[in-house]
Image (cartoon, rainbow, N blue to C red):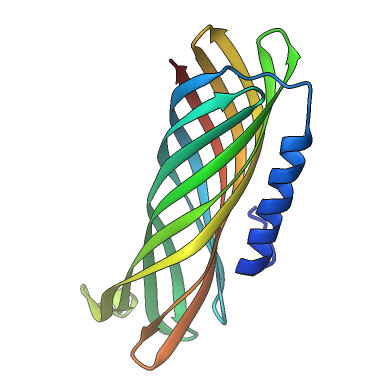
Length: 224
């Protein structure tokens, strides 16, 4: 079951990001390896869309991320690219009429992330992170009139188009890491990402939606 968080305005997101950054920088007794690193990550991603007037839809897909950054004392700073492709939202658009819509979302996110690492046991550490950046969402919309239940073999296309939007995105994460040996660590994280509100038009109708993601992420960091 997916929990949809209340919509957070862009200004609120920026203030949250700044406040959490200050808090993280004040934390002490932490562990992190100094130097540059490359991180490769794979995620189990649930994409949720809250439509204005059409309810909530969600889909779960696999995604990947790649990041480059540096560790300085207790902090990690990185630039991360995420690719989330093929999340499909399907809905019956009108009661009593077999008019079915499918919106396939392909999302690219460019994040700047900050991570705090706190050692709990030898080679084990807690990871707390937050990030902000830009999301690019391509929504491929396909609306068909499906008459198969009436003996028709074909579905008739009513509307088909692609819509593009760029929005402010932010994330918070928590997890655990393990230093396998000096220079290589494995991380397991939960991350919530807010992608924000977008809208597009289908003929004279304006479709408004709010996107968010819940992710379980496993990754490896190579330090050099």
